[in-house]
Image (tube, rainbow, N blue to C red; front, side, top):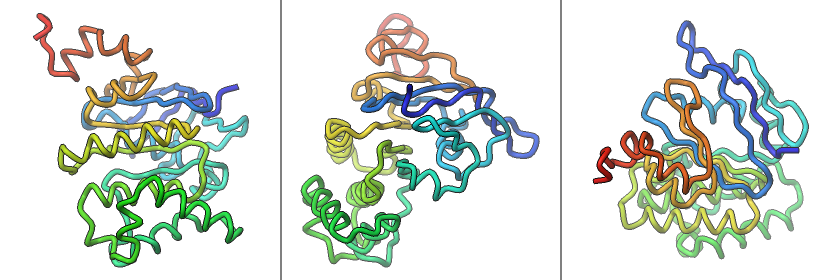
Length: 241
């Protein structure tokens, strides 16, 4: 049984059909990426998979239970964390206060402290800045904080929406090193990423979303060799240049 199984998911915004029957699945420990152009429906899909966007029809099954159109809190309590596009940290709160906010569903204080220390080990820069206001961090540091805040609920699956967006190139590689470490720790990851080349290098399996439909899927190594994907998303023309 898949950890996350999505079948025929449809989302409308009024008369606009944003998702047109999307199906995908993730098994425990997978690292899956979803690529596509702006407006393809990637953020709508993550929103529907975390209760932030109302779906018109379809099923979203997580650990065998149907979560479609449940309140966002049900997804978090079930073991899903969503790190949104644009980070959306609490700028006036300290780094540590942001992290504690991510653990709001956990009542065991010892577990919260353990999660906090684990995040500081994973992100040493956050440990150095634990008392600093989140809004004063660099873009890369804020992205680290957003990811760490998502991990504070101790999720089984982590949704990452455009983690490289607005970050200096030198820090993008570092952020993706952290993401690979998180996957190696046993967390399942669904990554939405504008940098298709990087996404297909770090993930194991990929889906291509175009105008609300999945048009390609497969092992990322195979997708990187697909001429249509190379031309559309990897900046390689038909001659391989």
